Length: 166
Image (tube, rainbow, N blue to C red; front, side, top):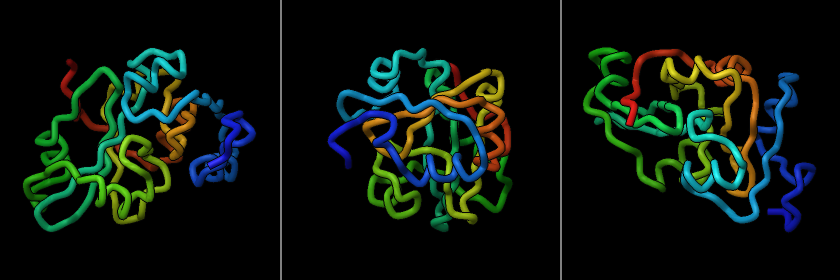
């Protein structure tokens, strides 16, 4: 990881993907690594409602799904399972080792971009109501701000009602 957290110093598979797709984004460097929505929002100077929480779930057959909600919402795993259909059995939160193995991101720096093809990405409908969103860059030292529709397209996300507003 570069010592200098300036925007030019942050390059991840996420920024590489966005560059390849021609998607504009703004790098929001952190002064220290962040691993929670609250800390990330404070470091970036943004509101929690524009933050995207990326949560990896797994079913009993060890299939994974990336479920995303706004920073002010809680995920409803039962709604994710209902959206995916009856073949998906009880969903639970993936552990830190699974998160790293499946996503290649450390827990707390997970983003919905660059997911393996066999991991569906589902966004809560609330995300689509935001004009812009903030996601992790895949590096705990920076976040990214981009247009919501660009994120939805780049993540190949499907929209469903999967959040419980806190």
